[in-house]
Length: 221
Length: 284
Image 1 (tube, rainbow over the protein chains, first blue to last red):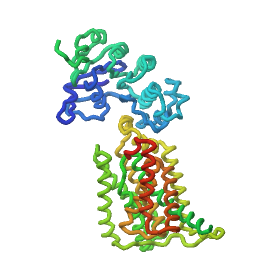
Image 2 (image 1 turned 60 degrees about the vertical axis):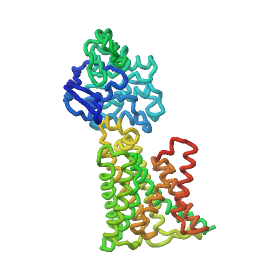
Image 3 (image 1 turned 30 degrees about the horizontal axis):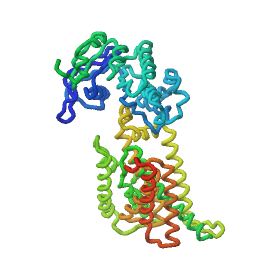
Image 4 (image 1 turned 45 degrees about the vertical axis):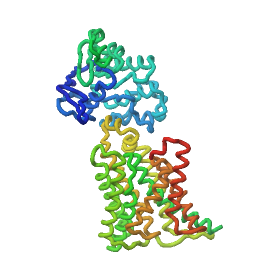
């Protein structure tokens, strides 16, 4: 459903992504891990069309929605408005957030609160809910765990796994936290300095020296 | 006593026009983060154009609407030039609007000349006790109240209004949600043109208008808008009323030739107070 080929992204003279290849099949959960500055967010922003690639192709069958790094809610609007705005491209009839409240019942009592006043975990719920409002076939989640308590991360991860299992939602999980990513996804990619340095089943990646090297900034040995 | 009441009513009417000017600043800043210094051009264009249309025997009402529509179109053009190129930083856009204001001078002088022009508004006066209230003042207040109510409903209740607010709250997330941030910004500029135009056609019968009135108008509107941090229409309305009444009282009891200075003083005061209360609000 997602096919990335020979993707190159440059910021000025700096190369942010170099010849990246990546696939996500329908209904699959795929991890994309790497250290800070490896190019993970650049990749997902390119998939969303926010960043324009210098060369290469991105083929997407169906609709993708992105949960951006740092939540990026509309802080001055209510939870309900945030959710409804996620459906901007949808028909009017698909702008009712009831389906998100079914998924995250905790949000019901917060619906009239300003998004900026919520806790980090609640904000992440709204961010996921807002992206789901677009009725995506593929959900790209950028740093699900960033700045959140482990218990909250578990809960959100369980929701993603459930969506994947019950509704066949494909998920691209972009994470610095490899433990979570490899536990949730069966397959993954490791990004280092803009290049895919390893890919394969999570079990193999977990034990791979390439992953450790990527996180240590590619030190020799 | 009746003198004071008279000043208060006249001041409230003036304040309403200032509030309309302020709302133009608010709409553009709220959606695009840009301070639009061409805002003063919109009332001038609308006032002058409405006068020309009336001279050409267009009926009242239609002529004023024509002036307002032209101001809206001018607002859209200003928007296209100021934010049309993707990635233009708000400060660059601000400087562009400043330059467009001067370009506006030239065009206005070519079309309408450099002399002040006016036209008659609603004639007649109602007397409440000892206080004489011009019908035009009442018209100003009614139209302003209606405009602000519509503006509040638009931003607070409609999906498009929320989308416009989302662009200012988080442009990146708005783009991810599929909102065309640039188009929304252009809507905001056009709306600001309409709002400035409404102020212009209401104000022209009260104080005739010329090409170089824009600075005074913009300063007044900006001063009122700053009260709400350039983002809240309701506070801009309060700021406009405060400023209008303050100026009228100052003119009545002290000296009438310092309108702009009073507005500037008010603006500095507001900014100092805001800066003291919340340091991060200084960077408007």
